[in-house]
Length: 536
Image (tube, rainbow, N blue to C red; front, side, top):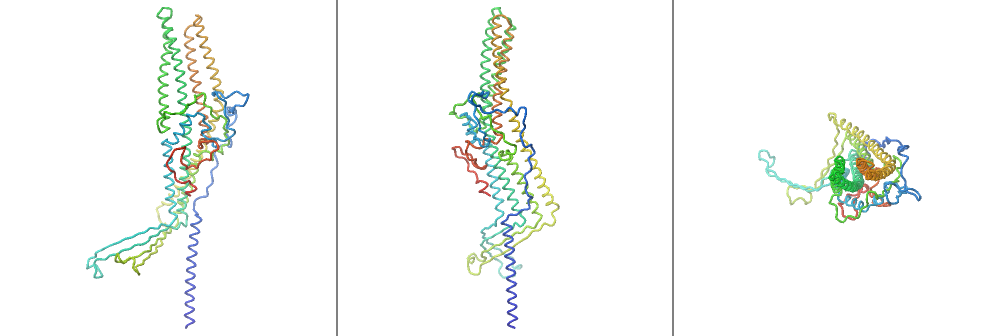
């Protein structure tokens, strides 16, 4: 009998040991699954770039400018020796090294501190990072302290005890944890992280674009200054000619036809002067909007349009380089990664959802008895939810996730194609503007000489005054075309610098800042959340 009892006890001990081992195995599996962070998201593979492996060549692309070497003709449109990029990529050239105008540098610095669109992009990035932290917290158990008290009266005819007023008080800790067996929460976390990283690249793209926008708007102001100067000179010359012609007409030695022809030049120049003054004021207003504050009174001295000595020989590299230099392309890829992770969450929704909840504390019918011996209470309530019939909702959600990924693939490919086109356009323009400006300079010289000769012939009575007016008008048109071409050439260099990924660092040789780093050029700025590496 004793042996039989001993054998039964041994069997119970073994059974209990087996149960404990099974529990530990299940816990180990759960911990392993949680630690590995496995998901049901598809394996990500970067789509092939839908562009050729090189930028266009031949024709206008074969006449790219280079830095001036000793004994060579200097770059057109510049009165100072041309500077060389020394083979550095645009992303490695600081904007203070690309732009040499002290006033332009000061304006860019002001805009980086105060531009409201840039502030919005930074705030969107901060909001996205906070959302990522919210989703990431779902991987961890929640623990909260809770206390409650109830006092209830039950009618005597419904009460099974003589007491009709009962009280209950409790205090303790509540815990809850969703065991992410199928990676649903992990996929949502990956999606939120990719979305956050996409907003950091969007902020970077906004800052690079702002540098380019301020520079281009400043060049527009300089162009209008030059146009106003040419128009004022033309108007003064036309007014002098008009006075002479009117004096001749009043004395009977000139015709009314000559008088009216001279008047047309005066009125046209006067009208152009007002139009250009209006455009100049509006261009300055646009610049102020980019800066985010009025133009300061202590602006540094600036250079004239013809003295803006920008780097002209920045190498274009290969189209594949744009994948790592263009933040808009990296943003599109992060959005694609987010869509890919969302598929994992949609797939995991088809599988059971396991949640562990429990509480531990004290329970007593009186408030003073909460912490007396024997008042301890606990509960453990694991639950599992298995989808059986959802009316096709889960299948539709998965279809939506797959379609959204295809949309992001197309968006990513379009971003690459757009970047390729922008660089190719910039190279085509860079290969033609120098020759165009040289021709316009020769044409302006010829028009000036033509005007001088026409004046001489008219003074000697060889030709009519119409030839003088025609030459004067053509010279005015040629001067305006030359100024506009010089401005467009400079703006193309700025835009190409941006298209190649330049404008993120301040000085050449600086360590590039993380995409979520705050702007700080000697002034306090709003704190930005920690980098993605820290947050992840």
